[in-house]
Length: 281
Length: 353
Ligand SMILES: Nc1ncnc2c1ncn2[C@@H]1O[C@H](COP(=O)(O)OP(=O)(O)OP(=O)(O)O)[C@@H](O)[C@H]1O
Ligand SMILES: [Mg+2]
Image (tube, rainbow over all chains, first blue to last red; front, top):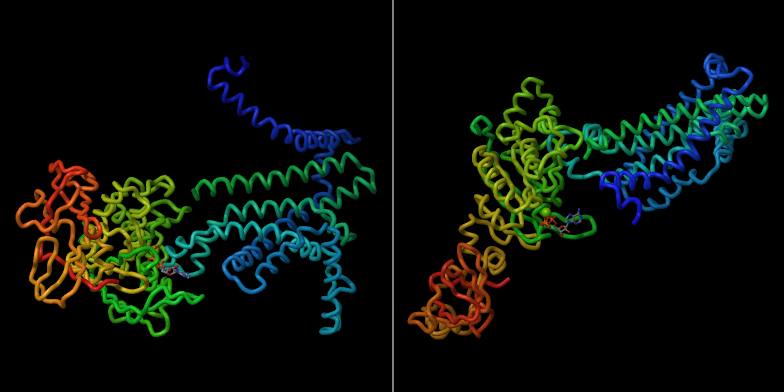
């Protein structure tokens, strides 16, 4: 006789549930809780002790870096969502020669490491870049923005579009055409149909794709590192603190903060998406 | 209650409206059709015959091939997109907005039309009451049954006072019992409102019950237009006769002004030769085998008890078996021998499809 057989049905159910949850719980503990706890402890284990968490928030440089990263990620998320929604809807609704190739090409950047993205931004908007050459020829002065926030912004948008576009396209395939026809029969203009039918139906997909774009931008490092020097985003700051100044406690505290903020943003998006999914039934 | 909602009865006219889809498939041969104001017209036909396509051309969701015109009363609406035609639509799949409550769904058309809030709320409430949905105003649509959802869809379509109400198989997704009760509701509603309505179905029972007139369609063309009685009793071709209700085929021999059919002989004006005739089950009377005045003898091959009557399949040994209705308590069963008496005035001689 097994142990479970002697239990009443209800506790057997909870036991089974616990067994099913165990792998997830183990993964969560091994790859999320433990490292984060460890980071948290290391952060507090430096010369300053726990005060480091207060210090990083009052340190001008760190705070700037945090705000810049947040703004950059929010901007990248917003622009990526806008571009990808329009493009994704268009691609789902119109078939034309070369459609499949175009979709395949759009998903290209998924395979590139951040360094390559940075390199591409430099080729486009760097000192020897395409945009520089064109503006030089047209206006006489060279437009170079690869090594600034603008360059990083472009790189991140380029990098984020594929994931978001694929998610949007998958969701757009499932839009019910009758719903749009019903709205139109009631007098809704094409714009109203977008606002009242299409966007609400895409909302869960947009929220989750946006959350991923946001999190990726928060933590991306390769591109920033390639474009380097004048860009002060959190992953770069952590890198500097850790390798150049051997300030391990501060680096750990910053990492903890980065993880916490990103997690909070994702959780927020998820709860929004959750409620709207339930409402969509 | 419905008086207050009385709608304008706008006649609709289709003028040589054909439809060829990209890719070259001809869904609809050029069609001329006049729908009277306030009339409920039903498009009936087998799957793929072009019912939905015709409905969508009236709605403005498809445009007819060049040369076709759609008229709402005196207005040529051919070039108007659906959002400017003021039509109400009801779909098989309900198509309710999932992100809105019942009341918000019904209010949507009024909101788009910028009807003032107080007026809007009053009209929504009246319409919900009319459809017996008052108690569900605040519900999410996924918390409603299929029948309730379709009533919300009807309310949403009607509250804006459309010029025509278009329904594409609105009852098909519902179970039999609900279908009957909602069909009665729709019938009452359409009569009460006086709105011009076009109703698509492949269910002949629905078509008979709801239609002032029925348009029977086959393979992209109109086979017959008429009242339910016309269509049933005076089908103009074999397709309509077979599609609507049960129909029997009997063959006889015409010779010098008389038609011999089994033991019987009827006056006949057509040319000599073999003739195939059609007759409905209810126009064949049952008698004892070999009884006087019977025309055919047969063996009951199957008996299906339907409650109010028993449907018999009778083998006569000559041509296809005949379907005949027996009284509920007749007690006839498989293996019994019967005599059949055909009503000569009900025999139909139709061109074959
Ligand atoms: N968008 C389209 N593109 C190409 N062919 C189409 C399109 N819509 C309909 N058809 C074709 O046109 C014909 C008529 O279609 P329609 O939808 O009007 O039939 P229906 O009578 O409503 O059938 P059902 O009872 O199955 O709904 C069919 O052969 C169908 O395949
Ligand atoms: Mg159809």
